[in-house]
Image (cartoon, rainbow, N blue to C red; front, side):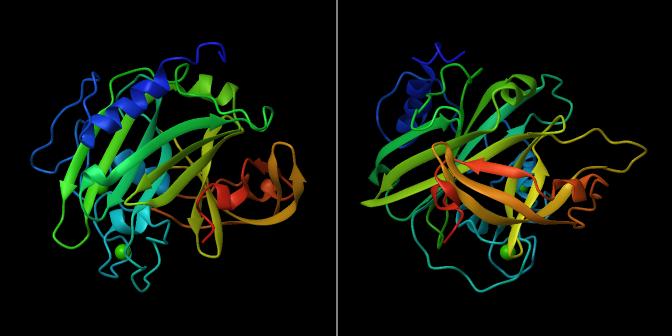
Length: 296
Ligand SMILES: [Ca+2]
Ligand SMILES: [Ca+2]
């Protein structure tokens, strides 16, 4: 798989370049009304439903915690969209996240999403790169060739007070394939109006479910990426809040140990009884939490 790494990064950067004003051959769809292209966004807040699931925001409310700061802004600022708080300073922002496919799609694919908030002209984005890192291959930046599996969806929305919002989503390989090479970290770096911004997300295979860490309270929640099937009208899923303690660093990144694990009620889903078993679990995150852009 690692040998097939020559094309997809070009596709990724090409899509964004096109959206941001540079000529590129990649096919994308215009969204003149500021709507998301191709992905269901039930509450119209520019975050697809599948992203809201993975990020633990509400897919039917554009302001999950009702603090008058919209979900999109809190999400790209790596804030706490489930907890009311004062607005964070306004700046260029970026956040990446990996999700499963839309319910009913039946393709089992995963998706990479990149969201950017640009203040000023969207043409002020002067660089963009995204790559994968594996703890087993420290320092190696793996482009997306072997992982991208379809056409990118690119959308743009101009707001009156919150800048220009950019959305880039591309289908990746089957969840089982991604699980086979996990844990892995998806990272992106960009320069917007002279400011270097970065973001990342680490994807784990937790007992057969692809999961990632989501900022939650004082720590992180472990949330599945793939929306499970409805069983008897009730969503059953693992929503497990982890307290991470830094345990050292190695060639693959910063090593964290799960010191505590508690179940929390999120999006009307219930935590798995297996959550407490996460205590003692060791996680290696390339670049650490700072590298993910989640530690302010
Ligand atoms: Ca939404
Ligand atoms: Ca809010």
